[in-house]
Image (cartoon, rainbow, N blue to C red):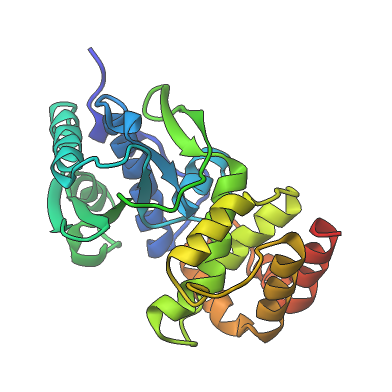
Length: 294
């Protein structure tokens, strides 16, 4: 019989000998993210969606930072919110039967982006009983789930294998499409949050990864995303390589890099702060941009 998933999680100790409470919370949150994806793979969820975003980059490609949310896009038009809710409820039931009970809250089911929260306290309680010096926030691990049921058209996909808690397959955006999603976030996030002071350093840490790996964006998807919502909606422009190069370069020159570094400090894995300093700064990022767009 398969081992209780709570036991599996608690047995998988971090390689790092850390006293950092935030690190431990992020570490166990990530293992629970793996388990929830595993449970979703036991439904037909990935016949209707694809995993994408920063957490996908972390779990699938092992980018060297922690992440927060599980983000998905619908791949089947006109799939109802009730159907997605049913998949998530079945995943929760599956994990409960495997010894990892979760709570799920349906936060917003009336917009184009469905929002859910899952909460876990069994792993937390077991961990804290053995490590009383820690005090995880609210005594629970909370993970937000978002499903975009009307994403911009143009994405392309691939299958990917994940190995924890067991081998399983999921559908994800391919690199070109996921890069376009990240570029849309970089170019538009401040508009959506209506604040120039909201800088998500993880966006630029991820940008460095895409540029280092010389990934080229899916321009059709990027164009559709920019024209669908945000500051470029309704504008008469050609989304070309030259245009994107100029927009990104301008963005990188003006960015408040100190705010970007402040955000990244909450998601460090085993990356020295000095390395973050060398990545999240204007000159080295623009240098990589020039090489990737040459």
